[in-house]
Length: 479
Figure 1 (cartoon, rainbow, N blue to C red):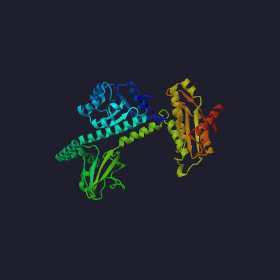
Figure 2 (cartoon, rainbow, N blue to C red; figure 1 turned 30 degrees about the vertical axis):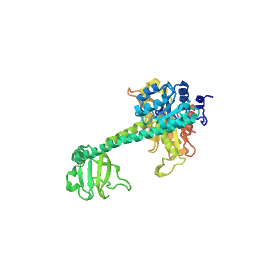
Figure 3 (cartoon, rainbow, N blue to C red; figure 1 turned 90 degrees about the horizontal axis):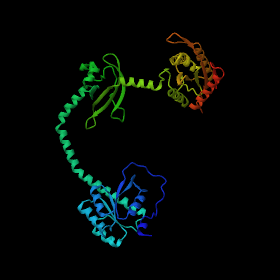
């Protein structure tokens, strides 16, 4: 076995069961050697290693001259694996002098790696040349190669970090000094700017001192609370914002706190406000007052309510959509919802599945517009027959789910029969004067809180519904 072959012997490396995938840039390693096999095998072996989540990438140079060009263009290289004998017997040693003296690169870690130790004995090379490690190819196994590279990369990283910090220290001190000078010079201008900015802010801002007086307020505050113009009225001790009881003390252990409140604006319309307050203290810790800002969130709250409605409502029928009615069923099963007056309705709930009979015939014979009207009218009739606690949702097409909390099986049957009768008696009139009637098939099942899931409840209700349709439609079946 040749020394070059021995260098790549893997003496301790186990097979990794998983590889860390990372997008971090790899550590570049300059390999300077005139043997192409050395480059290839080094690349293969290092492909199995990572350090700090980064792999190693080989930058190849097959001569000292080529390495000089690469080093001139890549001052960021952390480590070089350098052969001694290449185009000349001491080409590698001359390259060391070029790196340290001509390029002035004191950071890069140089590992002298030679297959002919006699050309550059280790003691002489270490003393005479500014290298960081000396390895004979005959002794450099894959594990030792990795160990040497990690040590070299750590050393390079620490040197670069120290130099970067040293170079930036003076700049940072000068920058901080200039910043303090600017702050001192512009203090008065900044104060005037802040006063004007607060005055122009569209949100009410105010400051209440420790004596309870509203010492400062901006234009938006005065417009929202016109009585604030009468200082004798609104700055008296203990007087809160007109018409409101806003807390002035932060909850224990906090500095800033917020709350929402509703007030009547100058025009009499209700305004919803988000108020944020922060106590101010003197250097000795004594309380000096409270600064506050109120944001009008009336429109935001209206939009949130509308978004909530859109997210939970079927746009055609106005009933709950499929996702929301199933969420309500899930909450009922998990005990998040309580029966009226706080009584836990364990096992006392029912689910009804309703399917409009022969709905396709309505669409085919009278048009899809008639089908849409039928769906809306069905929901109207059912809601007129439901209790306040009952919920209806459109599952899809002409199929609906009706949730009956606090209802036994017998209660559910009575309610379902009442709904069935109401649909059978319904006469639907179209805009063109035509009228038609419809019926519905109902499948009912009891909701058992213990052991039931949404899927199992829906499955039983569907089975009951299928049986009602199979037995002639316009009927209620229980499963």
